[in-house]
Image: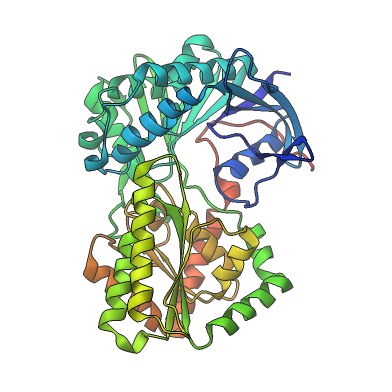
Length: 494
């Protein structure tokens, strides 16, 4: 069946596991993140499709169904699985995307390496995604492409199916022209994005950086600037932008440049936070803590997340404030992002070494200052830790949005807790009532975590009330592909 909405994303929209010799598709455990968020849009159409890749030794004879039909609470949709070899996946994702694109997008030029990139393979994989999307799409359908590793899909798709509406959403930062233009394939990438009807970003700064890159590479017409809405404006933070441009015209084709920060499922999280079993678990955590305050840090193991810098700050704070020893604990959750890349292994090793050093220097039989968790925590359990924590310490060096900080705020139905947030996380432009910090400054990091621990109850309540209002205003239900309409009609009943 042809689909009104086709979502193109590299991951499949479920967890595929074997149970008793049978393949089972499991729902994602968390309501947040890009996969469960995107699946929610299938409930607004009669039939949708999802294009992803799946590993195969022989793409001509993959040994699995390349199209499976799914019907669940989110709607009816087809999953088209591209059969890619291990070599194709490695070159397309682990090398091109992670070694060349990822460091540039996050402005880590010193980590950039394009020598091993197989650009022909990257183009070929993107072409295969485009062909699969074209095959699934109904006449005039919306094809919604996601993230930087599929940059070339819109260009290929426009050539194959000029009738389609094409949207593209970036989930990473988008850098300025002097950084982005380090990429030798910059013109081909941007020309593909200009084939879209809408290119979306999480915050105005990233959108404006895109416009700047386009203007540096092509002769285009750009619409007059408009003021950034107040809800996306936090005075004095690094990513604040005051005006933005909403349309680009290139060779007669108009592309909207839209801003729509990704939110979280507030009602779902609040429901989990209020459950009796959550309340009981929170009390257990508090009992285990005794008189100690709990600082919670949650992120992936990635050099962009600032995990090592955060642990170094905690070590300095314990060294210079001996009265805090035995009185505060840091639960540092650093989930391995990709075990196939040495750079991520190096970061994990560094984090483990620093955590071990802190516990060795300051720990006692009764008190260990750092609890390092290197596995994903089930979402309901994580909500309990959000509820129990005195401080959420979220300080990435660069981040497209960051949903952990929003999950923490949505969980605080008690109106308590303090959020310390990096000014280089996209969410900082919305959450100005957090304690905003520059994670590149030792002094600022140390001072701000001390400020959070010492904050009086009235200030905590006032800040959290405003943070909760900001997160609720930009609930997950407000998010979508720019000005493009997904489909008419109400959400289908489950």
